[in-house]
Length: 348
Image 1 (cartoon, rainbow, N blue to C red):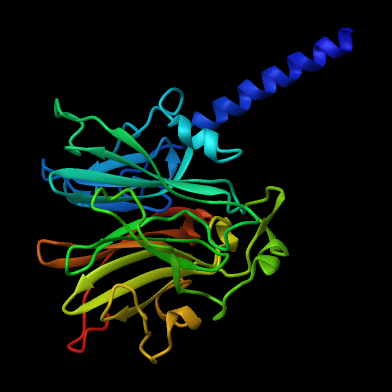
Image 2: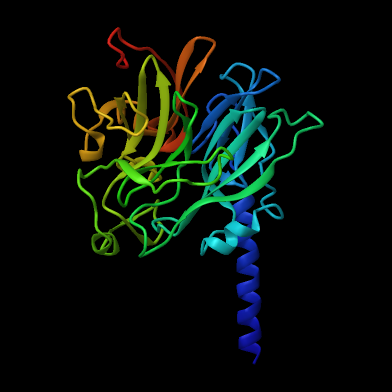
């Protein structure tokens, strides 16, 4: 009996220790902050806001995109995680991945991913706010619930890494996806929440559709020393689409994130005259058949560079992502670069 009681006490104390570790954040570096999966917007107050993977969705802000400060997370990690997410995604405990921020008709729409490593039992939700300024009396994130979900052994795609894009006629689409059968695109209703079409693949890594049987017989790999987990063999994720000068540009990440010094992330892209594709790289290869022109990847300074977003601010285009820094033992830190385009509308 005493052994049984002691065992229960040990489990309770261990759970409290793990919970405390989850909420313990590393020391913040204001000029090179640690970050995963960042997206950015310029708020009503003129500050730049980055939203990224973290408990409750991490937030930081800057006046110049050079020096950053932490802000409160979107959801309180202890009390504010949407109940629908924990009910829908088995094993989800509030560590929210890969948000996306957009402004439309006077509201900010923040899409976010609820999942667990290596499994495609996932869901995308959306929250709204009228301002990004946390000092505004109107500042309040209101969750609008689930947009779309994927189910293990049923769907051949993974509902994470969302990005909202409007075509030139004003029709909203959501692109998303990670591994399995690659990057998906689905048309949304005007509420920016309700899918009104079936999702279809616009980019794959291996160049052919994976069957459910192949997905269920997935490869395995290890994340930063943790237990081996299951994942699809189609190493592509993190889509982001922009429109510029007659072309839609699709950016995705190839290979592997989240391994520290063993990370191999690469950002590749292609372009199309239609938001629905096909997206072709500079060699004319369709991204749905394995194409993609390399933009950034492993180099002398970084083990990998990926999970990007791309923006135009004050007439300049910027690439934002995280990069695994060799000088910091593979830590994922912020990576911002101004990008320019050639006369024939490719990135220099």
